[in-house]
Length: 250
Image (cartoon, rainbow, N blue to C red; front, side):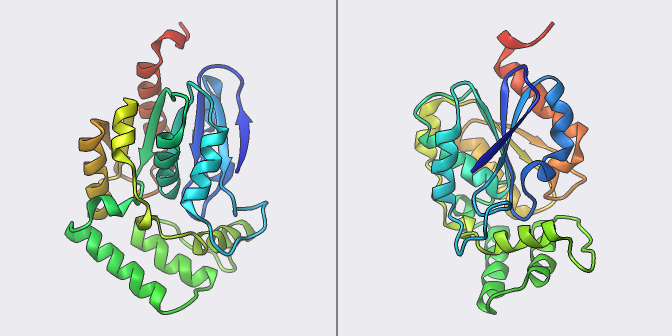
């Protein structure tokens, strides 16, 4: 896992991307925050510039992320990166300042919810048809999760590489989120959803309840909530300063 640092002052925000989009490209709308924070933008293992892997495992990536975290970090994970962030926060031996997760597909937390079962049935049926090429995968995956992206033809190199990495990811609904450990850590948590998909809403409902988390709903971008830019940035900034008021600049 690679971390690229932007900015130089203020609390450190560690940003962990989801599937397909990666690195600074995935968090480009958050770069204005570097004026007031130190951004550590992660690129998860198996995403460019690394060579593709046969399988990308959230457990291994969580261990890598936990090792890269520092005491007092504000950890932010979107989608698959939210699953990785939840696991890393539970494993981190030194305290974080806060945790923010944006529509993590930790569907094992909400099994039995009709929207979750429908989502997983569609995903399993797609996988059962056999290996998919990048375009076919994106044409299925993006509408499923509610990401409004029109695919160019041909696919840009970065988008194709991100799709190949996403295809290799271990299904995130296999993750077992250690809620007891997270609760015991007393970590201040923000859970963000987009109000566009019942399956993600169900997971966020569980996290809000079990972690006594602050909850926010930001509609308008489907699953790609960080791409909203300012609405998401203002929410995250307010949450961070409320958590860490002693370092807020005058």
